[in-house]
Length: 163
Ligand code: FES
Ligand code: FES
Image (cartoon, rainbow, N blue to C red; front, side, top):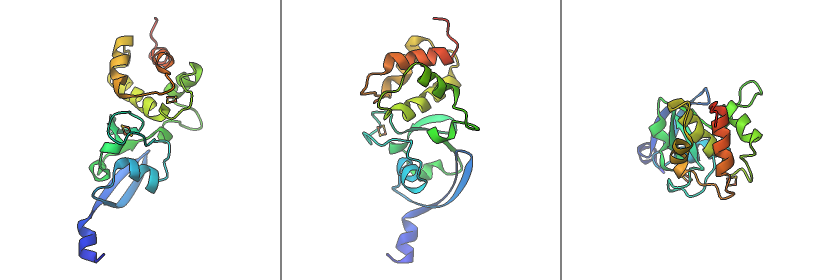
């Protein structure tokens, strides 16, 4: 490929991922999911439906939950991206991760990173969600192992709910 056509197919991007700055060229069609997994080696974000249905690929971009399979890498330009790898701090799990462990809200674990990032977004927007609000929020997060009830309990616990 000559220089001109190559240049036309890539976009310069500066992005911060889990607090680490990254700068370089991304392909126009490169998804954020592919960028995170294949370029940065952050395999915690899972690839499943690749059509914005299952929630397995959820990450936070400037604090908002996005399906990284359907979000182009260049769209994250100048933004802060957080993945499951960025949650634990100083060797200590995030409180949501702790709650998932405590309530056995993980079975095979495939959906878990996306589910936890969805929960982080929920609690930033609504620190004390009701059970119904949790169900509505996680409507797009599919767990084939059926951990939904345990996930709800984990969220209610970390949110300090009394029910
Ligand atoms: S892999 Fe992105 S929503 Fe399913
Ligand atoms: S824990 Fe297996 S898909 Fe959710």
